[in-house]
Each structure stands twice: as C-alpha cells, then as structure tokens.
Image (cartoon, rainbow, N blue to C red; front, side):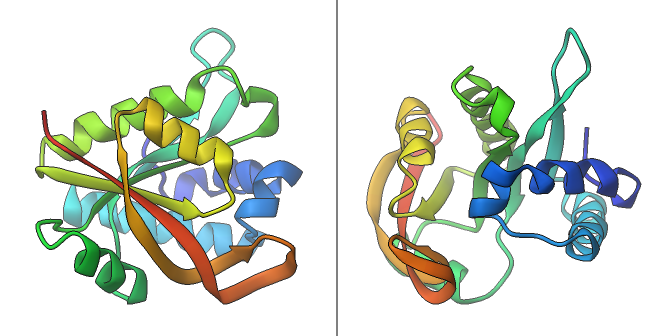
Length: 174
C-alpha cells in the first residue's frame, strides 16, 4: 500500500516500535510530513515507499520499497561511488515482532522489481553496524561498493550524528 498522508498513522506505528525508533527516530509530526512527501513522490515519480501488511491477518509489518533518493549529500556521495547510478534505492523498516521471518527480504525483492522497471542500477545503504540490514542486502544479491558518511547512528555513541559511516550496496538489473 503506497504511503500517503492518509496512511500517516500506520507509518507512525512502524516508527513507534522501540526497535525501529532506535534506527529511525521519527516523531508523529515527522511521520505525517514524511507520509505527505512520499505521497507526493508517488504522484510525481511513480515510485516511493509503501506499507506492508501480513497477508493472513492484515497486521502492519512495516514499511519499505523503492524510491528516488532526494538530492543532497548522501546522493552525491553514492553517485561518486557509482557513476552509472541514477538515484534509485531500496530500504525497509519492520516492526520488531516481524524480524527474522523473511519480510525484509520479501520487501527488498519487491522493491528491486519495481526499481528495475525504471532503472538498471539500484542501491541500498545503512549504518555500517546495522548487520541485520546488511545481511538482507546480501540475500538480495547486492554487493558492497564502499562507504559514505551521512546523518545517522554511530556505534557506541548516543544520538544522531552528521558523520555516521554507512555501508553502500548495489545491484545491476539481471
């Protein structure tokens, strides 16, 4: 289900999970603003993040999918690593009860499928110490291409920092 302003409460519910908030701190107001922006991206780009629900129960699993990375430091840094890349990325954030059950890989595969309908190279990136997400990237067939620094978490330091090391993974359309 595409994330739009009408789904802001579900996006907030994902980020209100303590395990998600550790990696992606987001206030309710920020969730609403992000949901609005992602809804606009669906309209303008035809691609952005979505919400995932369990097929049987309808329970909210998390969010993920593919999107165009907005212009900024991270996009410039990744472009320097991968000159052929045109901005498409995938990502995911799952509520903790759904960790370790294959949902992140499933969301990542669906994100790759959508992104590959629009581009030939897709990236994913996460803080260097986020071993779980890096393992998903590797299960998706992505390869590490280097590191960048961006705003994020630094292992062993509290809070969000502007110079957090991120591992960057990429994959080309098969």
